[in-house]
Length: 237
Image: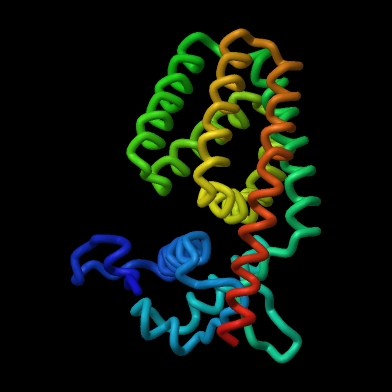
């Protein structure tokens, strides 16, 4: 497991501030949950994580609270903390709401997007195509998230953006599962090509419809992979 120092890639003589330690602990633990290094249902112990990440228990405790607010960990009544499971009903509700948010963002973005911004997103989409060809899922997901983030930013609706950021960690975790399905990954890329064409054409209604459908199309693969992960945890425990 990487330490905070390794994550920061900074000299050992440099001492980070308390808030920085909390932020870095959140980033490291979030990434480990997203990637499956910390699987659903795994118990997270402050003392163990403190030693493995090379920080005191205070930033670990604060990081776990942040991750609980994001829906990535569950804080149980007995005060233990476990990685949240991905349950099918929750994923369905999450995708419907998030798809609606992103659909609205796309519609608003089409009213405001500039030629330079279209070119910027076009370059990111080209990167996604190259990364898909190389089979680099992690970098693909990063480029994919950047496109979605830029569309939300271009929409320039602070309430929408706030709600989008709140739900994003849970959605990204579920979406990463869907991309483990090679066929679904290719289908998602094709859907993104149509979504980019709608944005380039400034067709807000079409982009909204395509975006909502994009999330609904990912549901079967996501739910199937979530069930596999849940079954694996049950077998191991």
